[in-house]
Image (cartoon, rainbow, N blue to C red):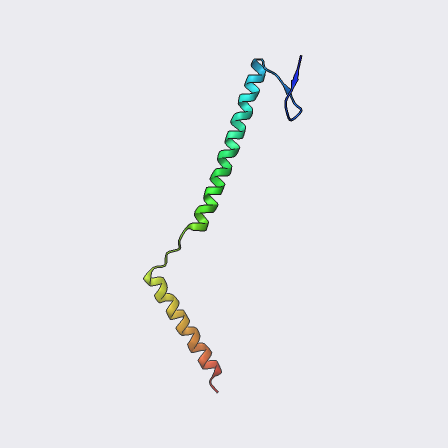
Length: 77
């Protein structure tokens, strides 16, 4: 006699059923671990702080100054 599980599939309680259950459990476990890893990476990216060095700030200031000089040179009549 074959039992049906809640999802409609047959339940085999013999050795093959146990092995199939174990394989399915391991598959679900692996999928869950991968999803947790992806979620952790998304969270890390979301919460990570960016760090700028003093040199980066100085470079940006210099670029801004050069851009302002170009704008002033083109606007001057």
